[in-house]
Length: 63
Image (cartoon, rainbow, N blue to C red):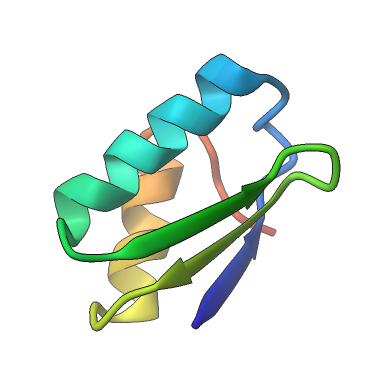
């Protein structure tokens, strides 16, 4: 399980874009979004760095 703090994820539209971005990297991943805390938990077989890179390219760089 990977957890990411995404300060740029501020609304439901952002959360949707994050979800789509992660599904493009790993269509089988499971995603949980905690919008008030700006946290995303991802259960994925993909390498963490691949997920970080995709999020950053989408405009949601994790801290």
